[in-house]
Image (cartoon, rainbow, N blue to C red; front, side, top):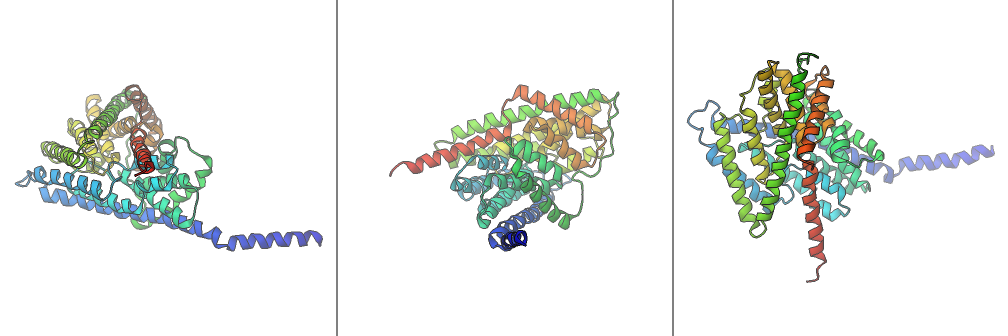
Length: 447
């Protein structure tokens, strides 16, 4: 009896704890935040697809009398996006992944709010959609990471949750998972790219966010593979030279993209010092004009995300041998222009183009070569080999080429490390950290 009397107070305390608002409010807000990431990611995808479709309708896919319109629309669109980003949505420029990485290193909530906020969610989505409507070679997946991290950080504020760094990680993973319908890639991305110092206690947050965001996405779009289903299989003896070539050459081009992007953005940032707005708009206009010229020269293939071209290559349709070079330049110019937009989808398109060209040289199937080229190039750009091969496996539904994709990704990563020692996203994240430090020092100076 005495033991029973001792247990009853403990049971009462346990029931009271589970009925407490302090226990359930953070959980409900976190779950709502994860579901909202899935819903908003789907809406973002729909808007992005419609924007690209409208651009191609506007210029005429048949190469008719309106082929010259990009020479007007694209530079003006770049200038508009750069101006809106500078004037109304500072912190929205570029991919969005560097901002999420930087926010995990910042300790002050005010500093985080400059790069992760609900205002930036609206700005990032709107400006990325405008950029795609104007023909920019950008993607929506990187911006979805910033959107997911912003939504989850806001949920943390509303729910009174203290694990800001873990929640940013969870929101970023949920964004990738919902953007591509690749839950495993979202988790691997969180561990490998977002959290180089990954903490085991965030496992539950990341998994729960990915599951709920994925369920919301599945509920709206159903289960699908981003690039359709690839049935190509790499034969062991005949096609291993192709695996090595795609890994090394793809990784080399990926490292070149990363190196050129970092050098160009640093030079442009120094040049902006005295007249930031005017020079930012000039850079955006020149980059937009160059992207338009490349797009016209390619017959319209390099405008937009490159999703159609990459999917065609994965399904066996060879790309023009020079496509990868044109898409490489269009993606690089779009990135350094300073407009909001990601590099995930354009990088996959460049990789598919490299693989397609190498497949013609080696006499291999286009679909298999495109997969290997995507793995090598993407691993070279972001220097995250696990993310590269997992995301490609999930996007194509092909699990027969695991070892080949692993090898291509590792070769791409190893080649890139020899050329460019700085991972692109982490190098860019330091810009936002430095800006936060400068802002703090300026506020500390007495007026």
